[in-house]
Image (cartoon, rainbow, N blue to C red; front, side, top):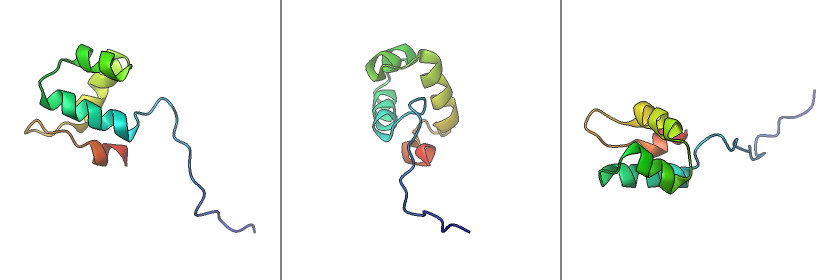
Length: 70
């Protein structure tokens, strides 16, 4: 059996938001920007930003960008 390559870096699909995009999303959300404004700034579809926001926003309005990327 071949040994596992545990240290191999996995490539993340371009469909997934990068950590930088998630941080930018959180910052813009904190400033009160709309979904469409955030989508324009991050160069993503408004539906992508909306889904990401629904998945990663806490009840108090803060964004869990690092938890979301895991």
